[in-house]
Length: 471
Image (cartoon, rainbow, N blue to C red; front, side):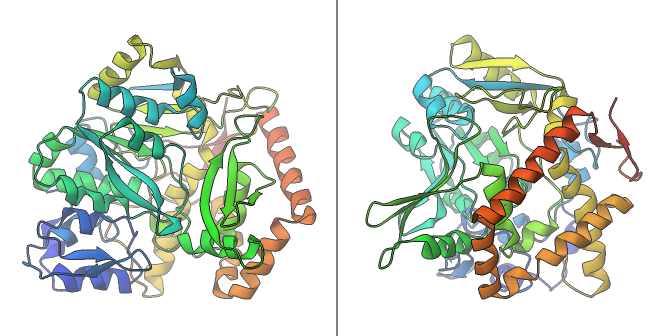
């Protein structure tokens, strides 16, 4: 049954009280899945993007059984999706092929965060009848620092969802809108949201027919929307407020210079002086990251295919795929995804180049190793101190001494979100010329390390936490 049924036989978490308990215990991802899978509309979204009760509960417990914040049985889901090909602990999950790709339509490529692959595919599939619509995330018109899920049924709706949104988005609440439709639909989601979908599909095969294609986004953390809102308040002209937040707004230099741009109610704009990775790391240091810190999946390994930026360096330490138009890394996991992508390529809607899986892994290694080794270390510590943790029924990876040192340094920064005044001060410093000096210094160090071949590659055996240089 995927997640063990005996876990849900306990009275700890059941029905409405269970979902509210999950929120109270700090295990809620704010992914929206419990809202979306409820057959009778029991839940709505509160002002903090958590679920709240708005109607009666029929006590089916589907919401709790699907919740990805409470429990995920990785081996069971992996074996169901990829028979004989899944092994928990690999950094990328099962892959059939790896590519860099970009949209065939220039306008869609320009709109994208990197290569515009997801937007192009969804438009193509919709216009050729492959799908009736797609679950995507757009800016919440009531709270521009937050994302909102919609079922996009037109080209225009899909184009609204272009670019990444590094903020809280309970977008899977939109699953409720298609609960009575046959489909087919596609969904775009973070790893936690893909977990919820796969759990629901195992419980009810009609959901597999309804949603035959799940596109996963590579994910480090999801920033709480409160951090974006606070940044907007700090940077807004006096008397103004945040009107729009574009997390990957393009500039004339193209990729990878597409980064955070805030627009205020007077029409003025503030643009980050850093690239997307750097501004993300600065804001994440002053943000409470919550349940994301207990997630073991960076690569959306239960999706049909995963998409991310091609943070791949060449032998000189420079970005290997740095065309201004942008490329995307594509990790194909299922034969269906391979077929759907190649059909789009043959129709001239995608340009694709094969790349070695190891190259993609090197580009995302720091994030992926943290999600496995360092998260396991966090979970052990939380258990030791009696804090609630997700139910993961498999042995967790070991953690190397080097990763433990990095984790302890990381937790020093976790002090900042506890004190809002200190977080604001740290954010101001990070965005100042003084902070810029250290950002540039760090990026030069990474380039030199890449040029010297000092990539650290984790052993494939997740129980062996030793690291070695590649090559």
